[in-house]
Structure formats: structure tokens, C-alpha cells
Length: 112
Image: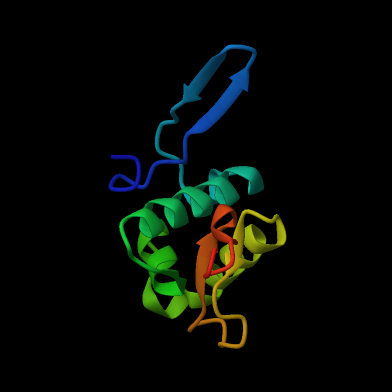
């Protein structure tokens, strides 16, 4: 439901022997902090990866409701997530609009 309604990504807090999940109400992208934007990109990539779909500029535009001509905004969000270490680029030789991304935990070698 979070992805469908374009809500901010949940925050998971682990402490001692408990885990807390914090859910947030809708926020426009302009109201989200850098951390919230990166977390939303990360969970978007996780969900898409686990459902065998690609995370790319187009999927980020759809997730955040950007018009097609605003691919620069999607590229900036993806760059923030990559720079933070939360996403990795699957095909680094491709141009920004053609790149696909993976959650950082999928960095295992393909023959592993």
C-alpha cells in the first residue's frame, strides 16, 4: 500500500530484542528530507527486485509522480541513493536514462 499510495518509506528501528516499524502519512517529495527520499528509492528498488522488475529512471518517475519530461529529477534521486550506498548501478556503462539499479544487498557475484 505504501508504494501504491506513494507514501514515504517506512522506518525500521532495531533495538535490543525488539523492532519498531514507523509508518508515515503522505508527503510531497519537496517535503521529504534527503534521508526519506533515499529510503523511498531503496525500498522501491527492493520491492521491484523481489518482484523481478527493474528499477530505473522510469520506475522512479512513476513512483514519485514525475512527468516524463522530468527525468532529470529522477536521475538526481537515483544519484543520491547510489552516493549514499543504498543502491548500486546494475549497468554502469549505460547512460543515466538507460541505467538500472539494485538494492545494495544484491551486490553478490552472479556465480555466488
